[in-house]
Image 1 (cartoon, rainbow, N blue to C red):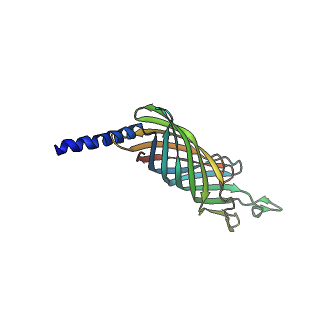
Image 2 (cartoon, one colour):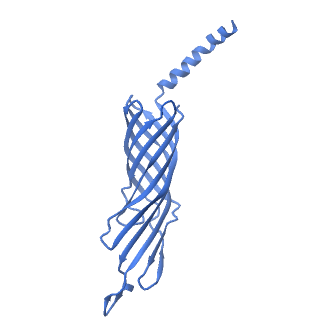
Image 3 (cartoon, rainbow, N blue to C red):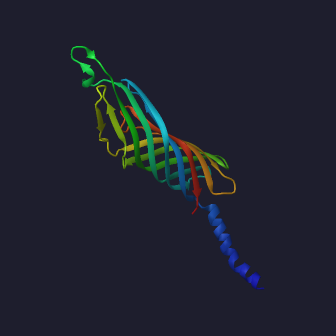
Length: 219
Protein backbone atom coordinates (compact mmCIF):
# COMPACT_ATOMS: atom_id res chain seq x y z
CA UNK A 1 0.00 0.00 0.00
CA UNK A 2 2.83 2.36 0.92
CA UNK A 3 4.62 1.60 -2.36
CA UNK A 4 1.45 2.34 -4.31
CA UNK A 5 0.97 5.62 -2.44
CA UNK A 6 4.56 6.72 -3.12
CA UNK A 7 4.24 5.79 -6.78
CA UNK A 8 1.05 7.84 -7.15
CA UNK A 9 2.68 10.74 -5.30
CA UNK A 10 5.90 10.96 -7.32
CA UNK A 11 4.69 9.79 -10.74
CA UNK A 12 3.48 13.28 -11.79
CA UNK A 13 6.82 14.78 -10.75
CA UNK A 14 8.81 12.17 -12.65
CA UNK A 15 6.61 12.59 -15.71
CA UNK A 16 7.00 16.37 -15.60
CA UNK A 17 10.76 16.12 -15.22
CA UNK A 18 11.08 13.76 -18.18
CA UNK A 19 8.83 15.91 -20.31
CA UNK A 20 10.83 19.02 -19.45
CA UNK A 21 14.09 17.35 -20.42
CA UNK A 22 12.72 16.16 -23.75
CA UNK A 23 11.13 19.49 -24.58
CA UNK A 24 14.02 21.67 -23.42
CA UNK A 25 15.43 23.86 -26.17
CA UNK A 26 18.67 24.69 -24.36
CA UNK A 27 21.82 22.64 -23.87
CA UNK A 28 24.66 23.82 -21.67
CA UNK A 29 28.03 22.16 -21.42
CA UNK A 30 31.82 22.27 -21.42
CA UNK A 31 34.33 21.58 -24.17
CA UNK A 32 38.03 21.00 -24.73
CA UNK A 33 39.70 21.40 -28.12
CA UNK A 34 43.21 20.00 -28.71
CA UNK A 35 44.34 21.65 -31.92
CA UNK A 36 47.19 22.45 -34.28
CA UNK A 37 48.00 26.13 -34.87
CA UNK A 38 49.37 27.03 -38.30
CA UNK A 39 50.10 30.09 -40.40
CA UNK A 40 49.64 31.02 -44.04
CA UNK A 41 52.43 33.09 -45.62
CA UNK A 42 52.27 35.45 -48.59
CA UNK A 43 55.16 37.91 -48.28
CA UNK A 44 56.84 38.49 -51.67
CA UNK A 45 60.17 39.41 -50.04
CA UNK A 46 62.56 36.56 -49.25
CA UNK A 47 61.49 33.05 -48.29
CA UNK A 48 59.02 32.21 -45.51
CA UNK A 49 58.36 28.93 -43.74
CA UNK A 50 55.91 28.30 -40.91
CA UNK A 51 55.83 25.33 -38.55
CA UNK A 52 52.57 24.33 -36.89
CA UNK A 53 52.60 23.67 -33.17
CA UNK A 54 50.20 22.20 -30.65
CA UNK A 55 47.68 24.46 -28.89
CA UNK A 56 44.35 24.06 -27.19
CA UNK A 57 41.07 25.76 -26.39
CA UNK A 58 38.49 25.13 -23.65
CA UNK A 59 35.32 26.77 -22.48
CA UNK A 60 31.56 26.83 -22.15
CA UNK A 61 29.08 25.74 -24.82
CA UNK A 62 25.50 27.02 -25.06
CA UNK A 63 23.08 25.69 -27.67
CA UNK A 64 19.54 26.96 -28.35
CA UNK A 65 17.35 24.91 -30.67
CA UNK A 66 15.44 27.14 -33.08
CA UNK A 67 13.78 24.22 -34.92
CA UNK A 68 14.15 20.42 -34.67
CA UNK A 69 17.05 20.66 -37.16
CA UNK A 70 18.55 24.13 -36.67
CA UNK A 71 20.27 25.43 -33.54
CA UNK A 72 22.19 28.54 -32.56
CA UNK A 73 25.42 27.95 -30.64
CA UNK A 74 27.53 30.36 -28.63
CA UNK A 75 29.57 30.33 -25.42
CA UNK A 76 32.86 31.63 -24.09
CA UNK A 77 36.29 30.10 -24.59
CA UNK A 78 39.97 30.46 -23.80
CA UNK A 79 42.69 29.49 -26.28
CA UNK A 80 46.47 29.11 -26.21
CA UNK A 81 48.10 29.62 -29.63
CA UNK A 82 51.59 28.51 -30.69
CA UNK A 83 53.51 28.36 -33.97
CA UNK A 84 56.96 29.17 -35.40
CA UNK A 85 57.79 31.41 -38.35
CA UNK A 86 61.07 31.82 -40.25
CA UNK A 87 61.64 34.64 -42.75
CA UNK A 88 64.90 34.35 -44.69
CA UNK A 89 66.46 36.45 -47.45
CA UNK A 90 65.84 39.83 -45.80
CA UNK A 91 67.94 42.80 -46.86
CA UNK A 92 68.73 45.58 -44.38
CA UNK A 93 71.10 48.55 -44.62
CA UNK A 94 73.72 46.52 -42.75
CA UNK A 95 73.66 43.96 -45.58
CA UNK A 96 74.53 46.57 -48.23
CA UNK A 97 77.99 47.87 -48.98
CA UNK A 98 77.89 51.33 -50.61
CA UNK A 99 80.57 50.36 -53.15
CA UNK A 100 79.87 46.66 -53.72
CA UNK A 101 76.11 46.42 -53.16
CA UNK A 102 74.43 43.55 -51.27
CA UNK A 103 77.03 41.55 -49.36
CA UNK A 104 74.96 39.54 -46.86
CA UNK A 105 71.35 38.60 -46.12
CA UNK A 106 69.47 38.52 -42.82
CA UNK A 107 66.68 36.43 -41.35
CA UNK A 108 63.95 36.78 -38.74
CA UNK A 109 62.90 33.90 -36.49
CA UNK A 110 59.62 34.12 -34.59
CA UNK A 111 58.26 31.90 -31.84
CA UNK A 112 54.62 32.93 -31.45
CA UNK A 113 52.80 32.18 -28.20
CA UNK A 114 49.79 34.05 -26.85
CA UNK A 115 46.37 33.57 -25.26
CA UNK A 116 42.99 34.64 -26.57
CA UNK A 117 39.36 34.99 -25.50
CA UNK A 118 36.83 33.48 -27.90
CA UNK A 119 33.15 34.16 -28.58
CA UNK A 120 31.66 31.75 -31.15
CA UNK A 121 28.50 32.65 -33.10
CA UNK A 122 27.46 29.50 -34.94
CA UNK A 123 24.49 27.89 -36.64
CA UNK A 124 24.12 24.14 -36.43
CA UNK A 125 22.15 21.98 -38.86
CA UNK A 126 21.25 18.38 -38.03
CA UNK A 127 21.87 16.07 -40.98
CA UNK A 128 20.93 12.84 -39.18
CA UNK A 129 19.82 12.10 -35.60
CA UNK A 130 23.45 11.77 -34.48
CA UNK A 131 25.26 13.87 -37.12
CA UNK A 132 25.31 17.65 -37.70
CA UNK A 133 27.49 20.38 -39.14
CA UNK A 134 28.10 23.93 -37.96
CA UNK A 135 29.03 27.10 -39.80
CA UNK A 136 29.63 30.56 -38.43
CA UNK A 137 32.07 33.07 -37.04
CA UNK A 138 34.26 33.33 -33.97
CA UNK A 139 35.21 36.69 -32.47
CA UNK A 140 38.49 36.52 -30.58
CA UNK A 141 40.97 38.88 -28.98
CA UNK A 142 44.56 38.23 -27.93
CA UNK A 143 46.24 38.83 -24.56
CA UNK A 144 49.18 37.58 -22.45
CA UNK A 145 51.46 37.69 -25.50
CA UNK A 146 54.75 35.87 -24.85
CA UNK A 147 55.91 35.80 -28.48
CA UNK A 148 59.57 36.31 -29.35
CA UNK A 149 60.84 37.68 -32.68
CA UNK A 150 64.56 37.96 -33.31
CA UNK A 151 66.41 39.38 -36.34
CA UNK A 152 69.74 37.77 -37.16
CA UNK A 153 71.59 40.26 -39.34
CA UNK A 154 74.05 39.12 -41.96
CA UNK A 155 76.90 40.95 -40.18
CA UNK A 156 76.37 38.87 -37.02
CA UNK A 157 74.32 41.39 -35.04
CA UNK A 158 71.13 40.30 -33.25
CA UNK A 159 68.04 42.40 -32.52
CA UNK A 160 64.95 41.31 -30.54
CA UNK A 161 61.72 42.98 -31.64
CA UNK A 162 58.96 44.15 -29.35
CA UNK A 163 55.40 42.92 -29.84
CA UNK A 164 53.83 46.24 -30.75
CA UNK A 165 50.63 44.88 -32.27
CA UNK A 166 48.82 44.53 -28.93
CA UNK A 167 45.36 43.06 -28.53
CA UNK A 168 43.14 43.18 -31.60
CA UNK A 169 39.63 41.97 -32.36
CA UNK A 170 39.86 39.22 -34.94
CA UNK A 171 37.24 37.35 -36.98
CA UNK A 172 37.54 33.65 -37.71
CA UNK A 173 35.10 31.79 -39.99
CA UNK A 174 34.50 28.30 -38.53
CA UNK A 175 33.37 25.00 -40.01
CA UNK A 176 32.85 21.69 -38.23
CA UNK A 177 31.02 18.40 -38.42
CA UNK A 178 29.77 16.80 -35.21
CA UNK A 179 29.00 13.27 -34.08
CA UNK A 180 26.85 12.63 -31.00
CA UNK A 181 28.18 9.61 -29.11
CA UNK A 182 25.29 7.12 -28.66
CA UNK A 183 23.93 6.72 -25.13
CA UNK A 184 26.02 9.59 -23.76
CA UNK A 185 26.21 13.38 -23.49
CA UNK A 186 29.47 13.59 -25.43
CA UNK A 187 29.90 15.22 -28.84
CA UNK A 188 33.00 14.74 -31.00
CA UNK A 189 33.56 17.49 -33.55
CA UNK A 190 36.42 17.91 -36.07
CA UNK A 191 36.79 21.68 -36.55
CA UNK A 192 38.59 24.21 -38.75
CA UNK A 193 38.85 28.00 -38.43
CA UNK A 194 40.80 30.76 -40.17
CA UNK A 195 41.57 34.23 -38.77
CA UNK A 196 40.78 37.05 -41.18
CA UNK A 197 43.22 39.62 -39.73
CA UNK A 198 46.98 39.22 -39.52
CA UNK A 199 48.62 39.27 -36.11
CA UNK A 200 52.32 40.03 -35.47
CA UNK A 201 53.49 38.49 -38.78
CA UNK A 202 52.70 40.83 -41.73
CA UNK A 203 50.69 39.42 -44.64
CA UNK A 204 50.06 36.15 -42.76
CA UNK A 205 46.95 34.62 -41.22
CA UNK A 206 46.61 32.02 -38.52
CA UNK A 207 44.48 28.90 -38.93
CA UNK A 208 43.53 26.13 -36.51
CA UNK A 209 42.27 22.58 -36.88
CA UNK A 210 41.52 20.10 -34.15
CA UNK A 211 39.03 17.81 -32.42
CA UNK A 212 36.47 19.50 -30.19
CA UNK A 213 35.04 17.30 -27.42
CA UNK A 214 31.90 18.62 -25.73
CA UNK A 215 30.00 17.33 -22.71
CA UNK A 216 26.45 18.69 -22.57
CA UNK A 217 24.67 18.88 -19.23
CA UNK A 218 21.32 20.04 -20.59
CA UNK A 219 19.00 22.55 -18.89
